[in-house]
Image (cartoon, rainbow, N blue to C red; front, side, top):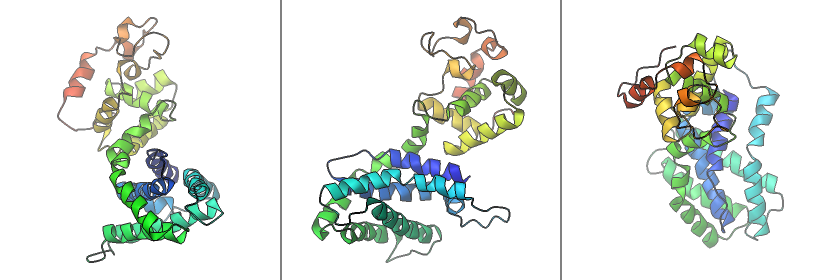
Length: 283
């Protein structure tokens, strides 16, 4: 769960593209951090060691995995320093300063402590500007950059960030294979046999991708993955169509595809895609 939480944070950070204003980028990274906390409150306390689960404790490997997420923040801090906006010479110290401060606000926000007239939004906007000034920026330049970042906030929208997990070469490929076969009507045993996995691993993959996509259940995960254009007929049948034409091709027309899933009628998928019910797929 710790790795899942930081993976989601990394996906939010990945939505922040470099611009000509590195301080605006840094402010947007802060907004991405807050978005992740708001979208994943159940993971937030776990990934930072504040969970009350009696059998849970962070390992050093967990902590190192989390620290690695700061790589993009350090890179942005380095750009702010190179541009002459930040006076601090240590980009890693800047990144840790940002992390510590924004984490504090997010923790108070999730705990319900920030209320009018000093609610979370008001405190957060003031905090971002203060952070930039504390690193060496001028108040005027910092305020302009923070304001500009607010106009860019749509790029880290929670729904868009959820879809970002389906980018090419993403380590979720195996989970998408499992989800695709489940979408076609395959049960745990059939998926396990065709993908050479244990049933427990199949179950874990299904649970993981539902959580990572922010879905309510497997059917909702299918919808999200389909809209992101990463779930298609070939993947639903466990077929590697990368060297054999478009994935939109019917699985029965793909050369060599003669598995139970490939022989399954595509009508099941069409019915599933059009369904309005959100009941879980058969396990």
